Length: 116
Image (cartoon, rainbow, N blue to C red):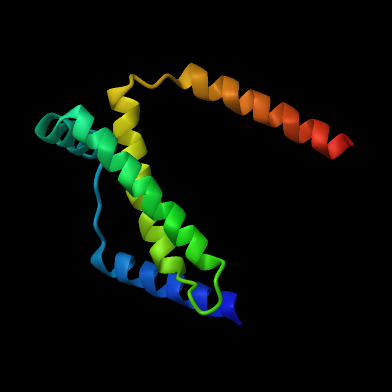
């Protein structure tokens, strides 16, 4: 029952978002992220990333408690964390090579787990 209610909350959030029809191009998104870093500073945005990750952890932990489930809260925090992660990628000069090598290792681990 708990998960059914949570899924209904998610559907309501999606409906609200679709109703607004906000469209931002990849270039606009990148410009917004860079402007945020330029305006508030890299150090501040790193601190904000830490704060947003803590809020996501809190929301995920609340999902484990009876009658406290809120997928809408979790989804909102995931979005906040993703935005902050994208800013961290800019701040720390993220490399697609590093991500690809991590994904390759993960793929190997999955293959090994499935074979055993």
